[in-house]
Length: 271
Image (cartoon, rainbow, N blue to C red):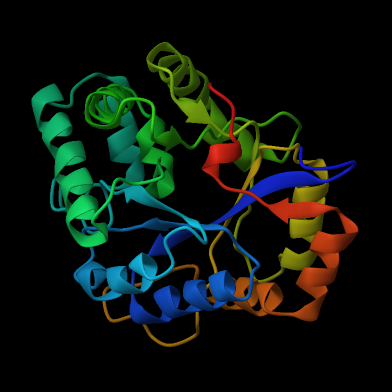
């Protein structure tokens, strides 16, 4: 903690590179000082066009790999998240193939950013699934030693059934693996909700940030309203609302009221 009552929390926008509208919205939130990290979809056809904007901001925020198996990846066209979960838990994925997928995305991140990722997480949290987490831990340890961090999806307090289900899909095992190889993880995780039209994001954000401890992480999904150039985006309405909130004076007042200072993965403890 940096001072009496002040807590450093990473506020991380997922899906950078998904399309122009999302990427531009994330940059606006970064430049407004409302978020402190973004996770990058390096298999998107637009990633290479947007990476230079992040390179210009290195040091001002954390930039990580958003490991993708089921959005832009061509590993298993049409396989839903449920299919990946089932295959991973049945240990039916080819371990060598999974290792190649992980390294290919790390290579793509490094090529565009000219540096290693500050941390790694997963699109729809696939990074914590069996077989996938082992491949990821192996790659991070061998490539970067202890320099890279990992997103932990576990919750220190109740944040709803959806958050609990996500956590049960591998958060504890991922943290144990990270501890074994000496990697850092966030202390607590928030930001999960149904993205529905009735959701009151400002109220949710305040509750999450109030409950998170120093070294915690809040996930967010801001974006502009323009139609995507890549594929259907089921949560576009929620993205627009989240961006509007982060760019409002209300968001700045909330961060100050809660004594939240934007943090980065360097604030996270060893797992």
